Image (tube, rainbow, N blue to C red; front, side, top):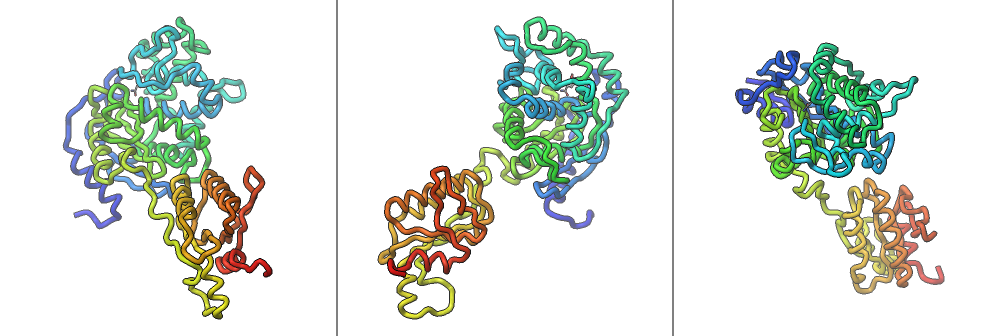
Length: 445
Ligand code: GLN
């Protein structure tokens, strides 16, 4: 009997024991070093957005990253060159073909996406190569920052990748012959082989996936590895192309951006939720770890993690619309109490984004309760307001004011205080009492 642990570890343990006995699939044997892998090895690791780590089984067993490196090198290229420039060289369309197919766009020769070998080789070639910082050094540094520790290369795997890599070399020459390869094909492919030979564990891969899920910031150490926009772009391409010719079915059934690798690594990211990785070297015909696929699919189902399943549906935003008469403060005099009764209060809570701001604005727009002359927005329980919500609230309040409604905001942190683009600032106060007093003041006050 295993010791009682937390619910997440229990879930991983359950998946491990359910699927450890599955022995379908083949170990990649295109090079002897991969064929030596232990077919029984099976590890799972999950890292939350707070950097909490959970694992079971062989989560610390090293193996080479192989194609799981592709989204991270794509992230580096996007960081250095931007999406428009990278897209000139590598498209972002699912190829519907195997990882090593000649997936090149008709007419331009541009590889279909950065997750198949053709696109990954071009992506690697796009990384700047200077005498001060050679291309591979940049790549290794980037992969290491995603993992939160310094990674290294399995030189034996690298040597045999290079020895047997004619198909990838052929791909690189073919791409150059049709146009889009900005460097010498041999140099590009050698760097690509080295990148595939970087040694990781399932725990490292979980940290890398978690960094993408966490908007580009490594949740273990707070390191901003790539911009939020880059992390979103990479997750989008993982969602549509990460599983090669099985990408559509994966998105349909599992519903998470993911990337597989030929040595048995598999990552999946729950945006704003977690990074997940599995290691088990037995592969299906699409080159995906059989047990990894089963484990991630069943975890996604069990915890309702499918991307299209109401992603991050927030709880209620507007907790109440009352009049200030109901304020829980010392008894007010009659006159004071009557005065308070003339303010409607809209109380919001939690983190405000587009969806939440729409709810707040809708509540502010409701007809005022009878007898009220003013509306007060109470932000005391609001934990965060993103830039979109801030702009929406500012302009919504300005519109109400322009319609002749007296509005005030209880905004102790001054989050709405700065004027918006139109120079209009709402009336913000440190306490609800002050906001109500201002909003219900007599004209002569
Ligand atoms: N090194 C392998 C190759 O380029 C990586 C492929 C993979 O992991 N799917 O062929």
